[in-house]
Image 1 (cartoon, rainbow over the protein chains, first blue to last red):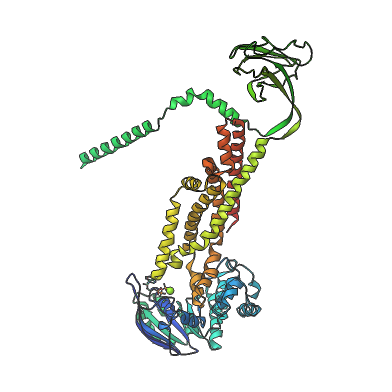
Image 2: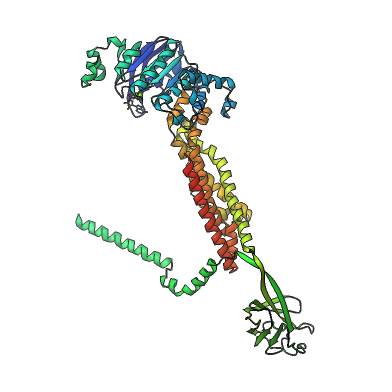
Length: 253
Length: 377
Ligand SMILES: Nc1ncnc2c1ncn2[C@@H]1O[C@H](COP(=O)(O)OP(=O)(O)OP(=O)(O)O)[C@@H](O)[C@H]1O
Ligand SMILES: [Mg+2]
């Protein structure tokens, strides 16, 4: 159970990206965060693993206060939270294998891994993770030799190496075409069915309807909606996306 | 408004002209001299353009006669031979500084001739050089240079060497020396670049804002190393080499040290900029996995900067070959030092060899480094 309480974030330049946001995420949920560009989705997700330090508020994960964790404990918490990025964030010049293995850095012997030496067991695990996302044959290619969809699958395999309980996915399919989007989200859905909680920000409402077990909507840093995707009617849509939002989108509801 | 602008522009123009006039005066610019002194320049240029690269073995044959100075201080040659390689002076003895004609007959034809004095104590003084004709004859005016050359009744002698090239071409001593010294320079540059890399690479991460500039201590470390690099970079390697030279006495070592220090600063700065220009995404992704900070750098930053680092190292090796050539000039050893010595001894052909070697090596390094850098991506 993840509890977000009165979370606020003000950037050093004065931008208030989150304003007093509170909600809970139960274990096993596929929670989708929606909102216009700039509404604070990325900020929210990054506050959860403290890639961004929240200004105010608390985040409890199974009653552990993430926001108060000292560095060593924070690393232990982060080990259990996988993260998938819109831009994949792979080390382009490294091999797919190295990228996937690096997801294990929170667990392995710090000295040998610093020298680039990995246990057979970890390599096995990496190959299994790659197999799971269907690209085991690419293990020894350079990451930038892969297509966008394949790179995102490497990103998921890297998160799998962490043996995560929670996956944060920040617009994981925004750089991909619709067909690839579904294939990536189906992997996340599969993991979710196995018990991993997923918090995912998405742009397209059709995807939200298809995958979300619950939805949180942000507007200008404020939570304006929380509920199931079905509850987002035309009026709610306008509230979330603004009056001038394209009628095409609204009509598709 | 327009008036004040005209005044201002006139003032600026006047200042600029004055500055140029002063610069012209202090540099003692005398462009006509470029043309007046042309003959001297041409001689030099010809010498440089005909480097001393190959030699042939030389067979030396010597003939000599007794030649007392002044007359009467010792007996003269009794009778001059009339056959075979022989010397015939116009006088058999001379007063100091008197001029006379020396002829040689039936010597080696078309050979270089060295005329010199051999003093009673065995030392020699070269008088003049000339050339024999096809019949092995030469005729040359000579001045009686040794003053009071007779010691204990033993007179000085006039000696003539004929130098005849024999056998095939082989690398000259100058070419060998130039090659040796060039290697000193290249390896001095290589070693200083290597040492500088080993030191600058880890330090550069400390001077990169995206790595260290967090918190009070981090910010302090960042500014410390950044200013260290900037400060060191502002010293000219030549000045540094001179300072080290006074301290450690001249030779390749102080030059090497100076080069290393300057390269540390320069590479440190270039490296830290490369680190600052990485894609922050992968680093964030690694932080999110719970990787320790050092591992985040090892797996997230290092792979991204390796090509840049290598490219800068090669580029610097190239630069350091040039700088160490110049450092040699101020006493740092290697090819620059050799060139300096050659010039000071007026050995122009030898200097020409050194200059050609420098041109070729610099060109080759430039070509090599750009080729290697092209291939790095
Ligand atoms: N590092 C930062 N410094 C200052 N302001 C920032 C920073 N990051 C984001 N912001 C601002 O905070 C607000 C929320 O940004 P955020 O990236 O969380 O939105 P988002 O919903 O993820 O948008 P998008 O859909 O474009 O990714 C925006 O107004 C943005 O300009
Ligand atoms: Mg975002």
